[in-house]
Length: 419
Image (cartoon, rainbow, N blue to C red; front, side, top):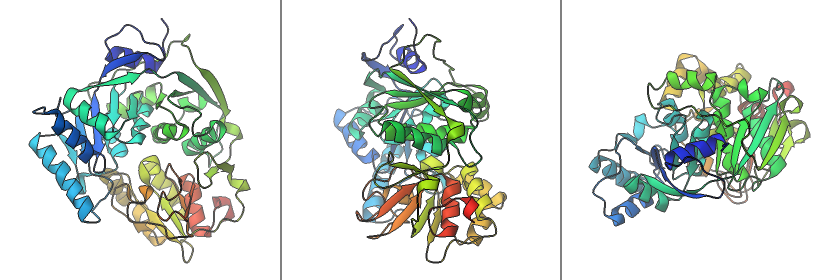
């Protein structure tokens, strides 16, 4: 029976020869993930179940990444609760303080999530790991608590939407623009409980950091997961970080798809999502005169070293516009360290940027970049819902890091060509 890559991974983890969309299956989990916001609820559920220990201390990751350092008493109590649980159960992969980075950045970076795995996290952007050829998706904290106890989850096999991306993108266009364009095409419910399987000529040449960006935002189209078939770029990324555990699966040539979408990447220009939806997308040339109070470059979507390099290449020798706050947060300590070594951090500081510790920070309206009423921010994050980064009367726009960097200098949304 022909199957897609997602169906093959789920079948293997359910000990079945084959599965079809709509099947309800019990699946073994390779990695369970929670953060400082979602883990406390999951831990309470785990404790109610009454198990003496987690199903596998090496297969649970607890990452205190949303409030780094703790911003108030409540966040400090949450992290303390998670820390004590991690110590009690001798959790191998517990990260906080100087060891922590954004969960969806450090897990691939450390080789903790691999091709062919099933990864379930109490965070909607767990779908990021599909860039490596894994089935990864987010669940509620209650489900995650049960997974920590049992190592298993019930899932309905999703149908798959194939997205073929062809052509050579223009120099300023990358994975962020392609995924924003797709979300603009199909809407925030266009892939509801479906797999978005990315392929095509463009994808085969796409670097891993851009694949991670695209898989990260599959949830913004309503997807159950996003996934890329592993190739030589995947193998090179994985081999540098892990020696075991990767299982490379490909979709069968005659696999069944709910539908097929083709995107001509060569025809795209940089994309900007206007408030208050990731689907409210416009071409950069159609944005008009949108003045800004803040620009944020970072997050699990665009906090990679390559993203920082791209931003620094625009900002070198320039300064953020007077009255505009430029906030930049590397995705992990490793990225931060390399950005220092390469002189990127110095370039960003010279541009009058505030450099924050690796964390989620402003993305969720948590801290280190909260918007006041009436303020506008351009961010390289994944969501721009009402009140996402602060006051419900503020506005958030989304773009790639190059556009964000240029806009910081301009004081309004624009591209490097306007500098």
